[in-house]
Image (tube, rainbow, N blue to C red; front, side, top):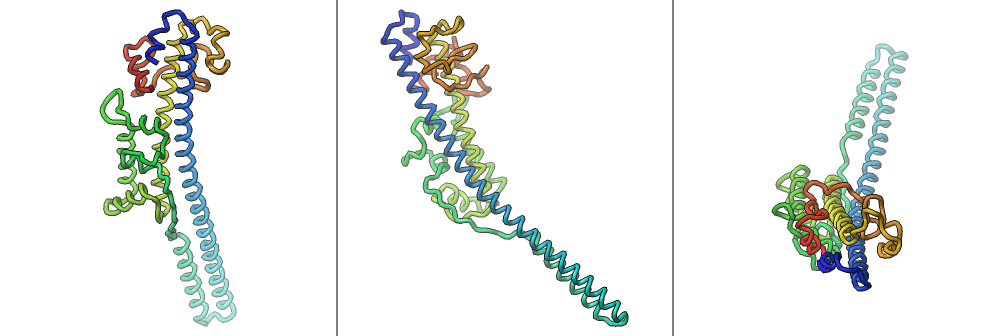
Length: 296
């Protein structure tokens, strides 16, 4: 990639075009890895959400059943007490029936609104959270490029995306789990699975959402690199790409108004996001060589 940028001012020949095509193909393979990791994190979170929503629907149905029983018990007690009093105004039985009906109705109402604690057995031997927690991925749960991107230090300061994720995971645990239960919860979340409740399902779902956002940020960085290379390796982009060059970007979809992306499907953005790793790697930047080196 560095040689391509160095040789772009020379006469374009077949060898230069072939190298440019190889770089475009490689960047597209990296994009596929990022999309695969994002898709897996998204699907894992959706599975947990579907389980949690099913449990909440069952809980709502249970509350409705008990509430209806409470209403019916109260109504029957009131009707029975009223009927008895009409038949025999001096009898104490009507009072007893009324009190009994009210007590039964109140008890059923309490049962309706006391949440039922459920246990969910969830196995996840392929655990997307474990490599983030451990700091290594010997089982290759992530594509190699994706895990390197997550553990690569930030260009704008100390730490890495993995460090940011660990800090967010810690905040989620602090907000949702008591201190005396956090160690057990970590073993459950970062292990092969076990018995969850609804609250822990929600914790794991939030962690997967944070992971998905971190991988999506890597996709944004790669898109910015594609934009930079598309402009740098095609000096004529301001006048529009020649027809003979369209095939190098896999068809007209790779060309957009205002610039060309090196890889088809790259999303154009007007400027790098604040704090993005490629924010300093715009065309003409002195950091361009380092940007190319980071994604080699």
